[in-house]
Image 1 (tube, protein in one colour):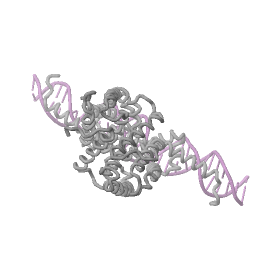
Image 2 (cartoon, helix red, strand yellow; image 1 turned 135 degrees about the vertical axis):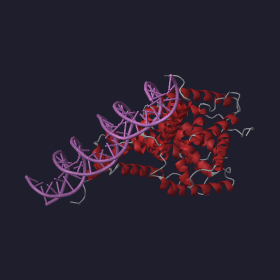
Image 3 (tube, chains in turn green, brown, red, blue; image 1 turned 60 degrees about the horizontal axis):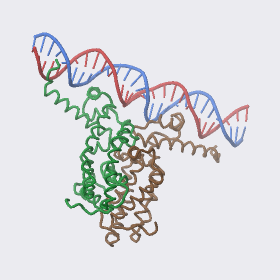
Image 4 (tube, chains in turn purple, blue, orange, yellow; image 1 turned 30 degrees about the horizontal axis):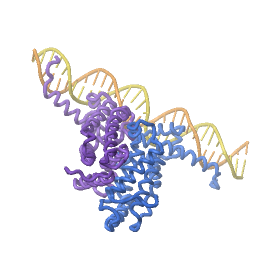
Length: 214
Length: 214
DNA sequence: TTGTGTCTTGACCGATCGGTCAGTTTGCTT
DNA sequence: AAGCAAACTGACCGATCGGTCAAGACACAA
């Protein structure tokens, strides 16, 4: 009978799937697609390997699902930008949001990084499709800002790359940061200081002064 | 007989080793330590797998040798910094040198990135030892620059991370950049423009004006 | 030619890979 | 209590993993 599946059923299914996804995200982030093994994921999720394959159809399906989830988390970023916006406010928000996202989803961010490092075999279409349009739209608006004299005449493409790289560094290179600074993890105060530094330097570097509402 | 090994012997040995190292660097960079297979490396070097293991003792020895080679390439960077140096000149050189290094050794840079992403299992000691001292020394000098009023009072740690991340981005995220910009590779003009952008924004962001000798 | 050390390689090892499947357990409906 | 579909899992599959080894191929000195 197809009738209403019991609440507890779907609940537990979601719970188990979430356990698998969390475990898989960490393993894929650490070792990349090829280097990750379903056995390692199953162990981390405390499940038999066959059970992982029962919920996720295959290694590839599991990986694609994680990539998709991570990209949807980024969709909200910098979505309300217009030619009339205050550049300082928008860029400041952009940097801060990116830093927060990296802290909130460190494994997902690393997973994304590993995918790019591997040459984006699964994300190629997304990069040259959806994301490319996203960038072109923001580039267009930023050029208008420059033309209006709201900010220095910098190439928006390099500016976007700068913000991406500078913020992602704190999650993807966390091992290097921890080793170099000699502490197991950055304190919240450190992260806020680093964020303020990035906002300060990048805005000033583009001829902008701190946004009023911050 | 131990006597003078023929010139051609050591020559061909070096040549074969170089072939293997080049192939291995690319494979490790793309798939990480675990994801790389000796078979793939052997194929790329056009050698039987057993021959790869004859020259390099093991997968781990090969990997460590590549890491060591990459780190020695970076040793010369920013080595002549003193409290009396011109900050603008030093930071400008730092950024430009890093960009050039990334272009010269893209596979090695990616290999390094993959190692960090995996949690630096083999480089942990280097990061918390040699590299940490390197950073502390530069931080000390930059703080003096700030105290002398030569530049804004920014935390040198975040500044170093910013330069590392912003420059490395162009090699490690090349797949993303190519996808987003819709071109197979950045032209030299693009790279120079990006470099000038980074120098300009970061220096200005730290309260510095372009160095005289550039 | 013969001896000697290096180089080269196919065959093979146990372990692990992603994935399948048959058989059992479980939880809910009737 | 009976029935049934979903959940679960140990055992197994062929392929590939890193690594070993013994047997040739090769270059060169005596």
